[in-house]
Image (cartoon, rainbow, N blue to C red; front, side, top):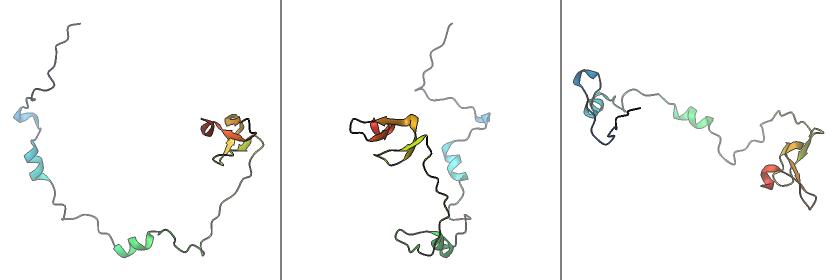
Length: 102
C-alpha cells in the first residue's frame, strides 16, 4: 500500500466557491444576544426553587418501602441493600459489598 504523507500543520486550501465562510463572516452573521431570547418571569422562577433548610413540614412523601429479600443483605459499611452475589464476609464477621471491600 502506497500512502502519501499528509502535513497536518500546513494551512488548508479553501476554494471560494466551496460554501465555507471565514471567521469574520461568521461574526458578522451572529445574532444580537440582547435581541429576542426567552422571556423568564423571575417571580415564577423564584417560587419553583427549593432552598436548603426550607420548611417541608406540610409535604408528604408516598414511598413504598420493600423489606430486604431473602437473597439480599445490607452492607455494614455503605448501608446499601445488595444482592448476595455482591457479599464479602470479613474476618470480623461484618458483611460488606464488593465495592466497599475493594
